[in-house]
Length: 421
Image (cartoon, rainbow, N blue to C red; front, side, top):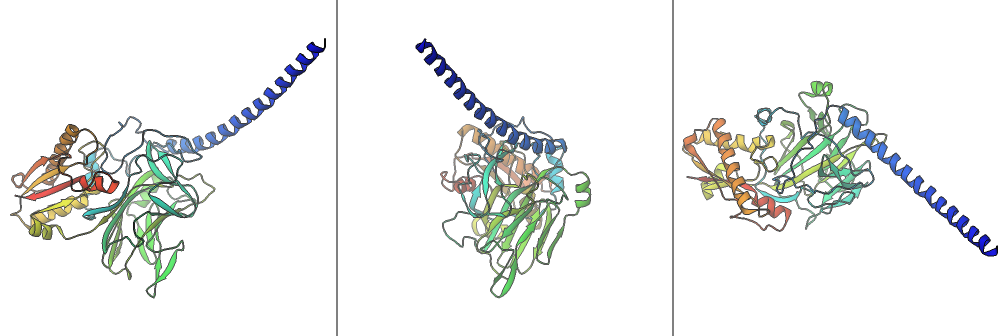
């Protein structure tokens, strides 16, 4: 009898213990589902706004402007799946090229910082950056890695080997994501060419302002303005990426949003030595404020001056779609400059050479470089250059000019060269 009572007591105790732990487990699952539903609702809102999915995009082993990780994990709000289009909604590559036909931004000659967020883990702080304010983490947006600003007033800056790393002539490029057009919680991306987190600072006796970038306008103190199509864009708003490009040449600064020039300051009044990028948003909205494809280039001589000195020029401003020979719209600034130069100097003839980095299969890289060099030649012919003045050749990964061990080295090896013939 005593043994039976003891056995019954043990069974009851175990049942109560399992039940208690089961309740905790159920509670945890409910909390997790609640959070997931909250994020999913925000994602569904974005999808319902008319974004076209890109889920059939093939994984690329090489990307001229970015590499994405194949594994994505859920971490707080870091995993933000979204069917956004890149930069603009266009029917074909030809439409994009036409849109950027008057673009005149030209990237600098040498890449000194590039972060395509390759091999970064979702939920972790981006390893090539430092934090000045707020918080930021790597997230997955439409299957590619981005830097997600997860706290209002977040500010990050590149990790470099020296504090004042910007040269006398430089360009900066990156993409920013805008979820809402004209909403009260509108994202505002902020660029600072000075230390600290303030919106204004005094440098060399002059007050310097932060650059404020919104979906339809750019401001820096009294400078800046709205995009030409912002009224129509707001009517037909879709969440999208926009490309930001900044050029500085000793004293003058220009800033572009997609194909439009938003700032043109002949005398900035000081020399930028470093930069940080951040975001400000209304915390009532679960934001998707994110950036990607950050690149800083050192400037150089004009194209014709380089030809006279070296008999060639190298450009890293002609970019292509992932794993393809399709020229991206933001390449048109460089293409337009080459066309203008060749029209001014009708005696010039070039062999267009394509080069890749050392990642991936050698034979694949060879074929890709041939297709891309031929695509550049075709683009120049379509822009009015006689075919007899151009030839093309691909070298794949066989002629590196930098080490293939760093992101900057690989990016410098991915290039198009124009050899005078």
